[in-house]
Image (tube, rainbow, N blue to C red):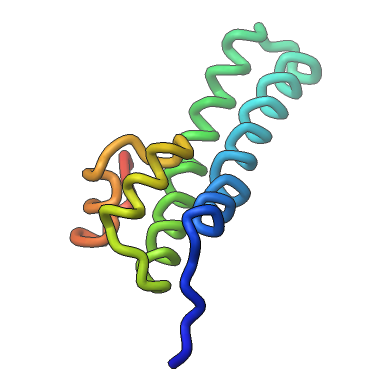
Length: 106
């Protein structure tokens, strides 16, 4: 098969658009929505938003790592790109998905 070699930019952009952008949206909309419409204290509403964002991150980062590995991206390169883009914290996150087929931090 003829695979297109993915650049670091392609890999990072996909991660930012499928992980970080939705997480920020979830946190902000949940925080502001619950504080305005459910009359919750803003700090409590933001904590709920962070918890929901973290749950989304756990599932979406797994899909991103699986996509990258399926497109022949080496683990070490993926870890470097993920750390720079604030998508993963350590090599352990990538290894949890690739070697153990688990969702990180769940």
